[in-house]
Image 1 (cartoon, one colour):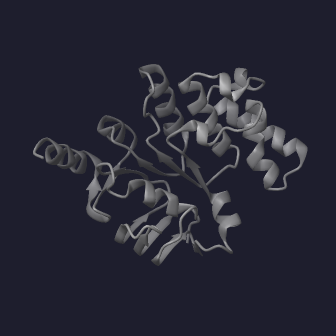
Image 2 (cartoon, one colour; image 1 turned 30 degrees about the vertical axis):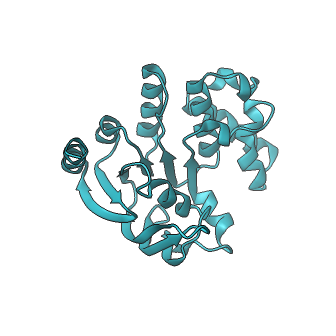
Length: 234
């Protein structure tokens, strides 16, 4: 089986405070699919994303990345396959320079200096941020931070890209840049978003989650239209 797929099999998750966030979530995302994860605030979207690379572990059920079940023992392998971009870029940027942030993942993979440098150059070029290499990440605009955060993930050369509200709080130019980056990523993508126009532009398929359950799964044009109507009718 391809290492580019994600499978959730009857995944339940309860937070330590007793809140049951996921209630039997099941789906399969196959190699090369770009899938939008839709839902209202509190529906469980971010909780789903955090399960894809083991930042959260199911209370019951199973998450697989390719043939590998996501467990504490498999986390190093899983996290090389699944690159996650958080909604807030500041959650991913913590080094003194952009270059150091983008190099952090490859260095922790044990790669040699030449390969790390190649990946830094390639990742920054792919997001149009080569000129930011020596800059402090804390002195960048919101759009620049987002591009660099994506570069920190792309430098790991993941098979799967997972993104939480990738265009939230970005201006139109920065939003377009992020869209272009996602379009150029030719592997599997799972994108949680409230932006239905973004979902229709980038994805072929949409999954809707409500109250911790998958309530719809199908072509993005049809599913997003139904989701939009349901919001209006609330």
